[in-house]
Length: 340
Length: 185
Image (cartoon, rainbow over all chains, first blue to last red):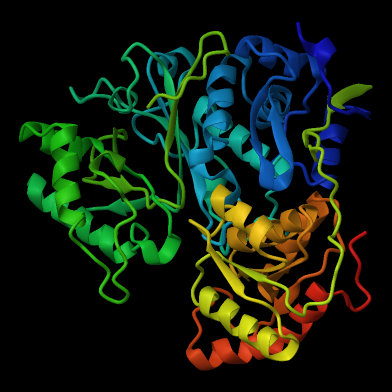
């Protein structure tokens, strides 16, 4: 039990209801009630993550912020995470705070970027991260609370607060929580984390900052025509080109179940889809200012299988700045080697 | 009685004192121009520099283009600023992440001994003020471009020239010592 080593200031409340209201008054919630972070709960979370309270998860030097495992644990408990979610929640925060993710920018922007968390590997089933029907929406505790934990860290530790440091014009409901898993069993495709350099038996988290999703409904069963539609949609959106955001970026594309079927029936692998989409968008230059593509290489297209049956839909995730970061989910909490 | 924990963590200020650099006369001072590439920023900085040169006979300009709007200058460019400039103008803080990074650029240069000023848009002031509070310099002064101009610096030539004229005087004052009643420490 690591509760005895906790460093955070303690507060006293009459009861749980009073604590919840106090956290509202202090501006420590996302607008929804939180679970009061009692030391025992926070200690259990740290133990489950295999980390010590003072272990550094990452930093945002622009804000003089160092994020410790204790900071993540407190906010994850507030979000409603169970202790067994700790390795995934901690890894998600590590990924957001990676230099390549440009954490200062993606949490201060006018563009209202949200952080998309994609979970791969055995941990999906172990903790119940939904990958099928409804996976991007409410109703699944692991999805909802892991995504919320990351956003509460952004609010409370990184100080990205609306009307203050956070300047999102509209912000987005995806900032409450945006986490789901890849449906690795629905197709024979190579899972995202394996394409990013990890082993199939490893668990992994990928975090990407996005202004999406944009739901694409090309009315065709023909792979080439679906690709053409996605390319036109991305060009119309424009965020992949330099004039809007300026930095290199990655592009998550989440193929729904019907589109998975159309591509696999035609014998297309993820590599085939990636190459075709790259060939579709890479020659395109914005005519107004000659801006080039921010997507520096085909591998920047991150293809993910998820969602339920029925509608013929793919979710494209227009990127904010920085790159998507994939990290392995450690079983011990101490293995944080970059996955690619 | 229920005991709970504060979720906000602790600030880590490091070892560098957070204070403004000493001001000196601007005559002959080499002027660093730190551009984040937002819209017409580089043109705006150039126009402000030209006015400073005409008014106070400052020295040469050193232009630094950051690789992205919300990151610091590259290490080699940071070294150039520290060795080849006497004062710095940073801009343009017209979006959420670039305004906050621009004010941070200016503050970090102050900590390194280079008097600096950030040009920021009025719409971004809550974020800019949040950054100065986080750095324990809540009164650190900056120059504001008002809402009559769009924040993302997508201005025509006439607007660039007009804004330069509007901000040049206060920029000179903040770099040269007169802080108009505001102080950082």
